[in-house]
Length: 613
Ligand code: MSP
Image: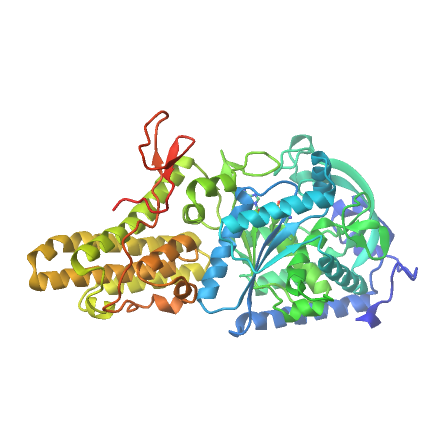
């Protein structure tokens, strides 16, 4: 790589940027970009570079198709800005990523689940000033708030990367040097409209009246700066090839068209340094500038992989699991992940991630919920009032993953009560109550024997396979639906078979009734595994009610969803409701002697154990 460095700002040798090549760029960039110094390689090197990109592309495709089980499943959430504490929109991506991580672990994969905080840049520095703190103090506080929320939401991340971490800075500088050595960095004046909230220069044509950013509804600021630029336009063809040869690279599929049309409309180089921002990583060859916050933050995905090394290096990150299997992001940051990031990686000679999934927005009154608009929903408040399982389940079940979804508290309560308290919690509680009364809480026979001659077992096997396929395809709402269907089938079976009246008839009817209970409890065991990625605490409680230990819960795998786990003689725990129903009360209503939590006109029993039997 070092042999390729023909030009650098340090040695003062500059190649003139070829005018013909400039002309082929978009009019926009010609109007606004005044090239001062350029670090492009001569044309022969450029074509060599493109060839290398193509062969990289090929090796990426090979990697995608030939996946060995030893290969870790590396998935990432965006690194969240610490300008303000987390809101439900940020929690949404992380919950979804956690569900996928847990599902992949159940499938036996070694998972590296990366999340973290994006702490540099103008937006963060201004937020710190507004709070009267230094940027560092401010970042420490908000980053900690993210970690606390992830704990409350049962997020099982493996790596938490902060972009202010010194190891991250080392990786950013190494990456920058690679891109520089590849001739993809040049210096120029730039004038344009900047949205601080997006931390991005905007095209005038994408703005609303008064140059307002359509996302943040705030006017963009006219800026003129002398910056270092990344030669994104050079990767136009390679990116087109990446997308045409890997149509699954961007998902859901309808987002691929969006990305393709951005590329088709002509890629313009983007500035990767800021002269006016101190709070950032200094540009290696010009200490007066800091690295653009997006160029810095995207590298968090790599630095997270080499986080624990004393002397981190890109090579460590690569051998620890790069390329990522999945970047999970919101649709607003798709361009950064599906256009800028792959080009940056190609420039540095690194492999491209396998998949970028852009989910939709949680909205309030149709507007994106966000810190800038101040229309957020407090995840801490939701978790403390309703518990993490309810929050996780509601947003995944009720918002089609990939599309937008609006929140309403009434709908939240109705769904959670109907699905988790009634369909699942009640079914378990009723069955265990009958088992206690009639069978001393002990299973009469193996679940395989109990299911002989019944179509119920097949139904459950089909539903659990459906759930697996949906999880695998990231159709998280449909995966929840398939598991819920198991609960519905169980309720139907219980009502049709009415074991409570058969127990009264004695002899063979009692035996049949005892078998019915085993069948339903086996279905509950399968639910406890299949729903565990979404509602881990609830599923642990179900598992424990079925007589298993926490250790057994933690070591189970998806293979355990196979019918036949429950054995005759196994003793179930005393029936204790696993999910508290949320009840509405009107102000001033007597809540009785049992301690109750009354919040904003709703009450939830304090113990997790108050569901209807
Ligand atoms: N710091 C950048 C990401 C850098 S990744 C290398 C950033 N941060 S953010 O905090 O503004 O947004 C993080 C994620 O939260 C994005 O994926 C964004 O789409 C998501 N959400 C923020 N508000 C949201 C909703 N209202 N609904 C769903 N997700 C949304 O962008």
